[in-house]
Length: 132
Image (tube, rainbow, N blue to C red; front, side, top):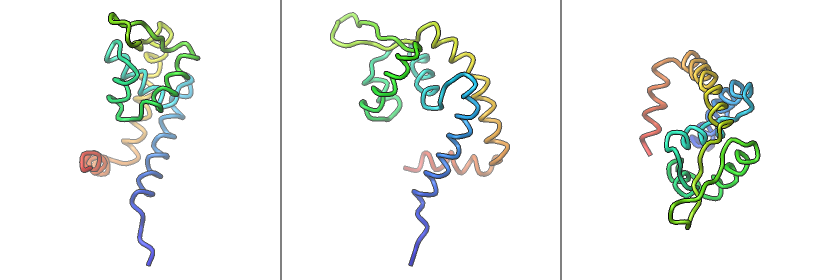
């Protein structure tokens, strides 16, 4: 007997949702993953890769690879910490500008998802995210 794989369904929904955000954010040459990292760094001011990984609930190595892309694009820079044992990440001026330009695009993606799913389905998604 074949049962529906809930993991597969959730991952498919997540990919489709990410594609909506990516489509909107493409106008400022960002992906949703990049936008999220820029937003987290912006909120914190400065933080280490390890701290960013913890805030994002992702592997440090995954965050490290994504940060390297942001650095290559001139959006994030490393600065020394007072104790000189670790480096801290911060947004560059270009990173702040790109994040500011992306905010209304992210909001447009949110509105599209809200219009597509409606409040009842969004409530279920919010409930699911706290269930595990």
